[in-house]
Length: 336
Ligand code: NAP
Ligand code: GDD
Image (cartoon, rainbow, N blue to C red; front, side, top):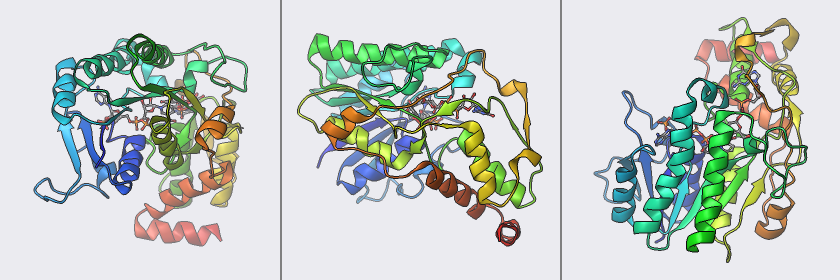
């Protein structure tokens, strides 16, 4: 039985990757950080009580800000594969807490790699890099496009990417960096724009809210469906050679298009409900992201399956299904 360690297991990608690896027969270990309330909700479908002797999923307290906790865990678990997904992952928030973001999202990568180098015993390593590193680079963006980060988050991710490549080249580690473009799902954090829009469309339709405040509607992103992206992470670690890959759909759409599609799906005219609040603008934004995922298609055999409109609809449907019962039926009745 192969053994994997996932940092960021409680996040969107961590939860999908856990399900994916458990289905493949892995023993999965995950790092969760201490919080004052439960932060394991996304794992409810697969987590069983630790007294259950048949369980192959194990959670441990550790933190990317605490190098000793990482080294201790890696030494104890001796995983075959390490997926480093943990990060302060919100771009807007990174302008408010830049030092913290660089410490966790940037230096945190170095802490994991260094622990792995010392006690990891040859484990393969996946680094969750980001298309945000391309920033203002001219699209389409591929593995050879020069980076131009536009936020503290992107700068931190660029350090994480570079140090991953450096450890591979310096110490011969099997370390891969996946440069993933935006990927979304009903498990996306509520403050990212797609989930915020999907949630608002469903709730406005259900009569629970009246307005949706947004920032830059002109930004364009290459949006895909998260469960498909975790397979690409795994594929990278199954290759003969460690390499870096861009993962995306090769299509780009604006925030405005996402809004229009979501509201159209519930039968509402978005212009009546959406207002601009400059508080959601960023000191510097990324205008357009568009992946050139050819290398992943050719070498990994990976392509996205879920298209843009399908993604919007499945996210809005999930929000409608999550409404309290009376509002849900009201939403459905109004949608006809
Ligand atoms: P997410 O939902 O925000 O999850 C982030 C995870 O990191 C959570 O489990 C979080 O724990 C954990 N975490 C945060 N700070 C930590 C710390 N100091 N120590 C240990 N764990 C910590 O992010 P995601 O969307 O799943 O993305 C996964 C990774 O891919 C992130 O590194 C993100 O930057 C990167 N990425 C994401 C996308 C995307 O479109 N989703 C695209 C490119 C790259 P809590 O649950 O306790 O908050
Ligand atoms: N969050 C948010 N909230 N974004 C808004 C809003 C709003 O109310 N209104 C407009 N936007 C715009 C942002 O300015 C940005 O241009 C775009 O919507 C997408 O914002 P997010 O959904 O927050 O995602 P992101 O692209 O900044 O970052 C995500 O993708 C990166 C990969 O490119 C995150 O998941 C990062 O962790 C990831 O690395």
